[in-house]
Length: 66
Image (tube, rainbow, N blue to C red; front, top):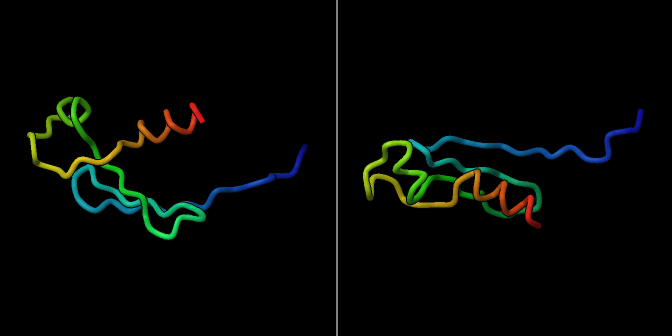
């Protein structure tokens, strides 16, 4: 069996509602995750209830496309 080449060490902290900070390797500042638009509506958030930020789904799509 091959040795593990890399293990990502990430810390996620929930701030309030859907807002979370993720500390990622090599990033000097935490990345904000939240919700926006149709995703926020799907989860029942009222317009303006939360500051809009990219969702974790947005980051997954970007990572897969890259």
